[in-house]
Image 1 (cartoon, rainbow, N blue to C red):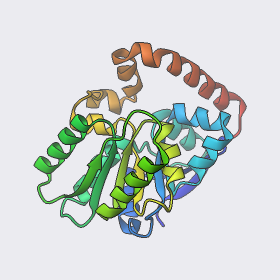
Image 2 (spheres, rainbow, N blue to C red; image 1 turned 90 degrees about the vertical axis):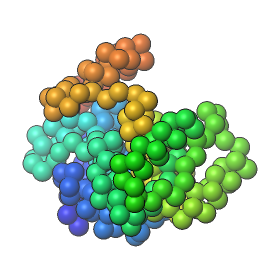
Image 3 (cartoon, rainbow, N blue to C red; image 1 turned 135 degrees about the horizontal axis):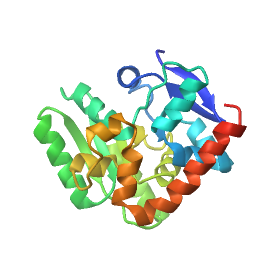
Image 4 (cartoon, helix red, strand yellow; image 1 turned 60 degrees about the horizontal axis):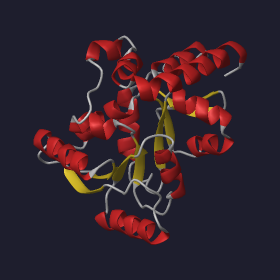
Length: 246
């Protein structure tokens, strides 16, 4: 196994770079069926520190990657020199690239029917040989037991190797945890990755990503939704860095 494990404030992270993460997941994709992968940024880290149930969900994943420059930075400061940011949307892009020959099949669960259509269309246009096993946009409410059974059967019937889950955190992590070993695919929670790849939402310019300013771009585009959350969670993260041991 190429990826190392490191703990930060009680959350278990898999550390390395994007290439190592993709190679490890691709090598093990069929062995990981029934399990799930998470991407954790400052918001979900703070949520996990404060919520034991959510912390256990992250720690029961096959891998939890540091999706956030501050998280990767703190891991490096604690001696994990190989820790790099592995963002969900970037991981999607890298995995599409290495499975473009159709050797691994993909299912998309989440978002809206319109976004899923654009997502699948854009991926197919870029990678004509890639195998898309299916897609499903669930209703924006709690599913009934029958609906949940039907959706699980739909996904399993597709025989997908990877199910990309785009429900937003923490909903997607709760979903994946509750469906571990029920859904017979590797589940990967990628938040807004669907919207970015479908281009129904704009991502920060590359120069801002390289300068670790993607959070600022998102704040400027969605101030009402994110201002309070960023202030609260970023402040707590700074306090954790000053007062807690990794």
